[in-house]
Length: 511
Image: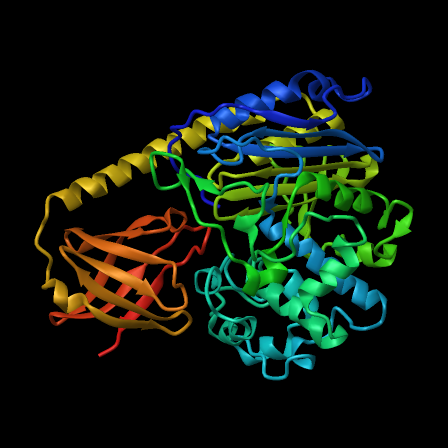
């Protein structure tokens, strides 16, 4: 996620949870400083609410909520407050398919066309070769997040997303580059009902959530806003204040990102990961299947970091892995609109961490994870939050100044190159489909087919540039252009928050 946006926010800090007095054998930072570190961090980074659990040696060492789950109600976060864990869902999907391979139901190297004969990627060679493992390892050659603006928060069915993946033109070679791909996880997850007769959501519920006693966890996004103890999503991106944003609906990409959970439930998931697939003396997932999720199928980085004690970073089946101060660390982040999270475990140390937050435009959740790893793994103390905060604030200031400049240009009410009516009509992109542009007083309005809750305004600035402003601030604000040829509108190039999708979209006007 691109982290931009100024911080103008004051909150009353609440805390609730268990392990108010951690054992004496925990690192000094955890025992003496963690509480104050988190309180300062959520203020510095404008995080309304945060919940955290640390498990060590089969015990909960720290489990608390900080701040508020909703700024207006000021209801505090606790260990049972639900957050969207987004891409931390991916390990549930990878584990499900690893379990099916261990049971002899599938091979991870089976081609996708074995289960979906009509499935296509952009080129025919990749279509023939692409396997379940490729899908779980982000191997198809697309850029990170490619296609997500089309697929995320839309009315498209899972089947239609799979069909449209043939229009994803990969800039990289198949199996050569790591391009993080949410739709790939959907495809892999759709193998489950073909093989078992159970939907992905029922399989995950029956094989993981229920046996682990994760009783408050939702496998789909449906009804999340109606839960009695759920965090409200917020963002500071693209605005000078903290703004409430809509809850995402990940159901059509469920195997990639739909689970909603809390740190209390996630402690059970961590205990299982740290006990070779067992929880409360019951084998939830066979060790051979769990081991498959931790084998690096993709190497992301093999150069020593100048910031962290790590040399190698890889990706397994919905799981990042790296060396860290001589130990093997596994983790994944999750980013939904208004929420970011991290789930991490270190089997050699029997250490697990889960951190959930409700502002998507901040790096504190990751700094906190590294700070805890440093404390447990004997890394010399550096205040990670204070190390990263100045750069974040500088970028926020620069972004604010850029947006202020755009607003000033709009306020000049310059004359458009053509009449407003010349820009109206239907436009089409091969991957996305249609958008409709209409005239609204002195500006234009974009309505997005398949995104019924999303629209955007286009306000003219000057020199052919327009200010694009989405009604959902998560998608961002940008300077964009129409392509004019011989006095006629040919196309519009739109942009969106790189957290949604990095590349712009070109929509051609339908004559």
